[in-house]
Length: 212
Image: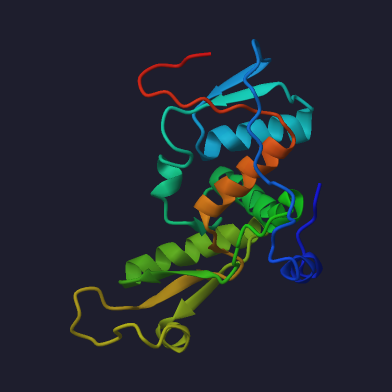
């Protein structure tokens, strides 16, 4: 498989980028599969990817009646975080964060994960107390959390409205520095390319019913 790097980018620039290996294949549908996944969104593609990567199940088909990523993946906030209070939610999300951190290397594509941090603003003393509890719970689970007062938030987000007569005054906030943002539509394309390079799946688009 062709590796993507700055060196290959420079090398292919001399040929007008005409000699790159094709990243997309169009396999002919088979008569039968070990696994058929309905839906070519984030869950469908991830299921096929990890079936192959972790369990060596490669005779897999994904069937999608619309366009890839046309569901929740195309509507989500693109925020990657694990700033939850309850243990199950926090640890499950932190496991997902670990997958994101190494996904560019696993896929050989830049999935554009940017760990720039996230701050949840508090608009009352009661909300500050809730964020303090959540931050303590996160730290007990080994997840980074920083409780910020009003002045600390102002240093980080100076463009926010810190006036006293606003509807939602800023009292402080809870920051997770390791959280970030990712282009989920790009990830779907990267994962789809990876799967087709392995020749693991076939896509058959239909409008009203599933046909094999």
